[in-house]
Length: 593
Ligand code: ADP
Image (cartoon, rainbow, N blue to C red; front, side, top):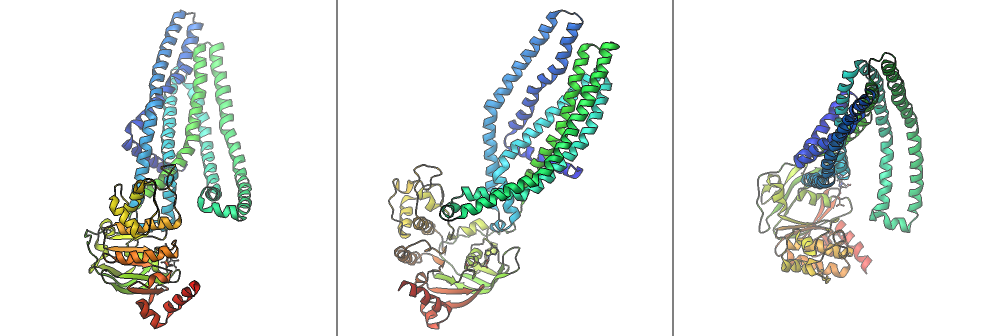
């Protein structure tokens, strides 16, 4: 790894370790301390105990000494084992739950707070998906990688100190061995990065294939069309591309691993140290057999540790570091939308005004709304109509302050909506989106959008939205199957009625409905029109509709084309104008004749 990358990985590790310590302090301490504690006896027994036993045996000392040393060693092992198993089996699972909770809570809170427009930014979106999918796993990986590095460093230092007291020349062998292994380790890491980079586009394709097979969105098409075969052909091609891509890297890595691990270890440690220390133990008798065994074991153990630290651990450190880097970028992403100070939540509708509003989506050059001017008086029912892509949804997105206008201003009761605190501003609106979502919660909660609800008010709202299905536990029935195997499944129309009921339930002056009748049959659509008329007694309602039969009851209709208002008036006025609205209306009416 280059120095800059190393520092970056280190910083990312420190960030993650701090994050974990903040939420589960005992986990970091336990992970590091207990690993060292459980490994230490074995590291020491390989060198110190072995040396002691051989020395006692060769010097003809009392066997009782060996028994005492072994007894102490076993006692030490039992105690450390008791502590470590207690930590790993009892404490760690609980700590992991806590960490999982903390990581996802942090991600959910950040995602919910971010500007809506951030979802249009592929970098932010990728970071969010990555954080959701893998941060939990990566947090443990960082921890266990740190644990491995620390344990190995402690091993190198302790064994190095023992060897130093026996024969410092052995450390020279180790140093030479390591100085060969480290640069090769770097080359291995480099090849590994190149391999990951080469495989990334192919990994992305693999993820796409998984999505196609696990998401319900694709299930119907796969069953009813020949899409399965088409996807399989591409899948097979991707597999052979993966094999072709990876092959040269594997050969390179194999050669490097062989040069790194086998040659220096065999020649310098196994052969070199055996010859040197064997000569000193057998021929010149400068050292005992215990020293010979200890240096041999110790030197190979140090070399192995250094090898692990510089190659395997360095590779995982870089990889984990990259994930943490993306998590950090996600957590540090700044909201662009500035929240104002105004917190007014109106009890009754007031005037809404679009003042010369123009808008381009972030990162695009095309104006999707141009110089839009109009005023909505309190309590009016306003219909927005026009062909696909005319700008209707964009207009409501601006009113709901999911995006900020590029030019001009939207005012409510004469005040620019940018002056509002965003959360307070949103409380003035009930919104039903085209792509509304129901949640795995009770019917009542799905209408109130809160963890408590007023039963009667929910029932009233459901009635107003023409939802009359009797559910087993009434408004306490759980929807969807995620939280309850007996959760209620709903048809598209029923689901939409529940979403519409939200708008009736919420005490607020304005309702924005995007295609409220898209999934409804003509009877339900008629009922909805009646309810909307009733709701308009208390609210201003702005709705987008392609079904022009719904727009007949609107007080005012705005017809948009290419981001501009081209016609405006009541249904009768627009029919009399005989323009594009009249043309569209007649075309649709013909279909129902
Ligand atoms: P409508 O609701 O009338 O069908 P929209 O408001 O959804 O139209 O879209 C208006 C234009 O804005 C279209 O050209 C559409 O492609 C574009 N558009 C919509 N959403 C985005 C977005 N998130 N980023 C970029 N362009 C968008």
